[in-house]
Image 1 (cartoon, one colour):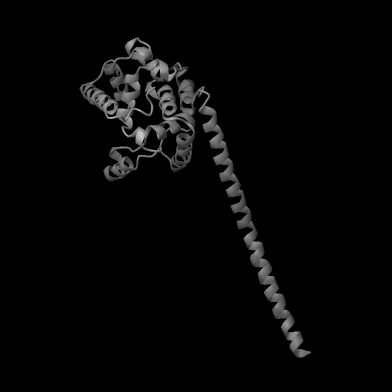
Image 2 (cartoon, rainbow, N blue to C red; image 1 turned 180 degrees about the horizontal axis):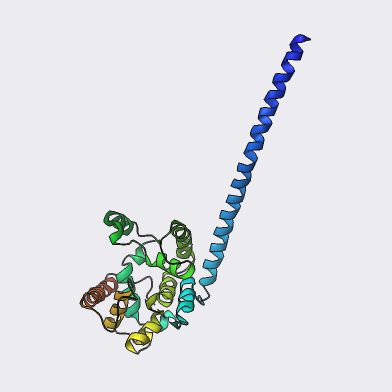
Length: 248
């Protein structure tokens, strides 16, 4: 009897410790469960948005909205890629992402070069820039980069390369309050997007890295030199086939 009496408290203690451990695990399991559900919801929502914009032209973007509120309006007119000068599409690809037709959204060689060069250069592809401009916000943050990394492969999987270039050209900023290639062509050269010459297209592409600090119609010597290099690059990617994925 004495032995039995001694064992009972030990069993109770063990049972209590086990119950305490299980109770402690419940909040962690609950948090993990909702984290997984939240992640799945983000992925599903992202896929829906990507699928939607594959057939519907983005009516606006977060950045265009914020600039419109700040400036009291912006210049912007959507134009189909069939009505954009082919010089323009080739120029932006040559300037921003010459291997656009060869990658699936991320140019790994450009990323490695960007890391090696530090903050002096970027490694974003046109696909990444399109995702950022169409769905996300400007500025540098790990949250935005993470969302961009999730959405970019979805865009590459659902959209055609031609569609990516079309959306990019229609949401990119070309000057203060000037968004999209048609508004830019009219703002700087008084012509429609379809009538841009090779030189005009190259100059528009040359101002993209700093659209508020550069002018396509009154280019500085450095912008003029950059545009000349872009014009040559546009001719090169046409000749070697690197523009084939978005050419009609």
